[in-house]
Length: 84
Image 1 (cartoon, rainbow, N blue to C red):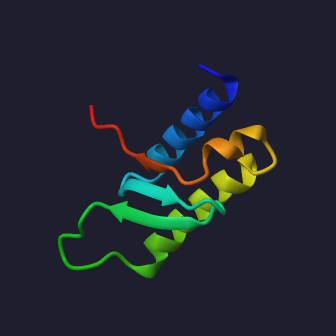
Image 2: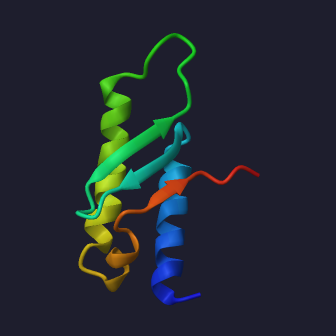
């Protein structure tokens, strides 16, 4: 495994660890958040605060890796939680 790929895997695992409601997310080719999937909310919808936390965490991931060669491995990708 390339070091860039290992770095992305480690950071994405950390994002999913910090955000237990997050099931998956996609980034477009501009590294903008394209889609987010979260666990269903038993009483309706999650608050804007929850979505804000998700956006902040994923934005931090992209910002951290954007200047790294690893950022090319993020473009246009979908990441999903691994169920064990």
